[in-house]
Length: 87
Length: 241
Image (tube, rainbow over all chains, first blue to last red; front, side):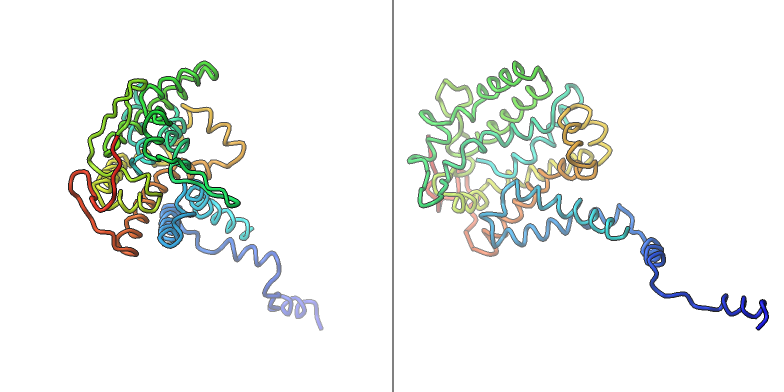
């Protein structure tokens, strides 16, 4: 086989689908949602879930400590976790 | 007593007062919560390992004398401010705490028990708009407050807070709130900036959510009757001085 033919064969070769580099590149290529969209959505999610649980377990849930922790978990904790997983 | 009002007052007054003088938002918030943080656990009662701690006369303990009613007075705000200033030399914290305690005290004038505004003068100032039912325990107290004109008072403050919506913006927090209080620089060592903004918005989240939760709990999950008459609801035994 000539050198030219072997180089063509290499060009057409399909690389492995899930090399670590490709996984990272693909995750970075995911469409990034604007902060203006996801931030209010997270606040809304925190509020709806907090109110729903609070109606049934108001004795424990309806304290400022739990409220602050809940909000922090939703609006700061969740995006931070997602960002770390994407790395 | 008022409920969500105490979570929202600091934002509203900060918007109005923050232009002329430097005050700490955190101090106003602690001041606004302080009178009840110090006292309500004993008003409602706490129990652990078979031991129950509760004031025998909860209403008098909370608002009267003898008792800890002095925590709901303008005088208490001045004393706390002077002590904090002597210890810390921070005007922003001293004034903030005093204003927070004053806002709390003044908004509690609305119920039937009222407050001793000018303690040690023990006269109770009370408008009697909604029933004071702290002596009945937390659950009945909440049901009563959110069935009488108390919920209108809370809703009014949520409306006022929404009118002050720029105070919830990240830029407002960074440009106005952070520079006037060393607390945020100190907290910045523990939390990143994104988390600090969330914490700053925590009290409005708590206020709006607990208003919504108690309303749903009282009138959808349970069916406590509304009574929007002056001094109501009259299905609960209101306390008077």
